[in-house]
Amino acid sequence: MRNTKWSRLLSLLLALALVAAACGDDDSDTDAEGDGDGEAAAAGALSDVCPATLVIQTDWWAEAEHGALYQLIGDGYTVDVENRIVTGPMVLDGEELGIDFEIRSGGPSIGFAAPRVQMYTDDSIHLGYTTTDSQATSWDDLPLISVMAPLEVNPQIVMWDPDTYPDVETIADVGEAGIEVNLFGVDGFPEAFVAQGIWTEDQLNPSYDGTPARFIAEGDIAQQGFASAEPYNYEFVFEEYGKAPAFELLHDAGWQVYSQTIGVKPDDLEELRPCLEQFIPVLQRAVVSWADDASISNDVIVDAVAQFDADWVYSAELADWSVEQQLELGLVSNGPDDTVGNMEASRIQAILDAQRGAGIDIPEDLTAEDMFTNEFIDDSIGL
Image (cartoon, rainbow, N blue to C red; front, top):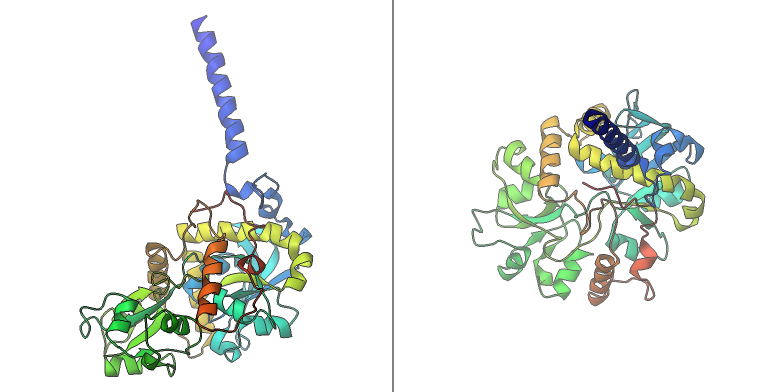
């Protein structure tokens, strides 16, 4: 009798465990509301709701900061060398999603045109990268609505030589020391820092051309860059420098934009809504997959850049280091909750307020809620 009772109890517990596993196996079975309807997207049914080829315009050459996108490129992809485009079947963790994914390089590869400009001149582009501050300044003419933030923290930094300035630890210290800052331009965060008294206007030099020459030769200037790229290059690639520069993230200095978000044109939102309801949770899961094993995306990125055969060079070593740095610094991470990819209105509103305080021209009636939506985010997906 005792054995029979234990057998029945064991069978019941096993059945309950199987039911629980079926209901909560992983995040791939949840949709944007977390109620389970998203399973179809992971089984290949994006073809029912998305364009046959979903096209996204990035802001730079292929690089590890774009890792979540390239994590979705499956075997058999092609590289359009002339136009710097990678196209392949959309695949997540070995599961085909039923459509192709086309990733277009930006920055120098398109004459430094902003992704939004490309989107408004080429209707074949469905999504594009954008950033909080430039969203605001372009709102009247080229508006984009952010629907996901693969990066939680903006990778941009200001860096300086640690031997020349051993007592400088922050961006504010750069201002107090009166150090010249080599910049791509002075609109955006430099203007805000001047308005906030962090820097003075005569410190700003907008002549930075992206090369390391001035920083290495002069040694006493500060310079903007990416935390997930420049420290590696200056230590391991630029042998004449041969050390890691000191730096602080703009985010830690108070300029907390969402960088490289996934943007859609407002007029396209309704048409793309069924696709976004399925695709955005897929992209969230791609961020998690990338954080677990970025070798898929890194292999595609390094191969694509090699095939492009342009001035942009990207090694496997830099890609691997960049992934580690992004995770260590929290550039890719959950927000203040347990969800990856969602955005906070308060952060966006703080940037709008800072832009207005600096006299930057943005629409008077623009609010944070106009610029983003979390409606496609699956709250259950996180790192």
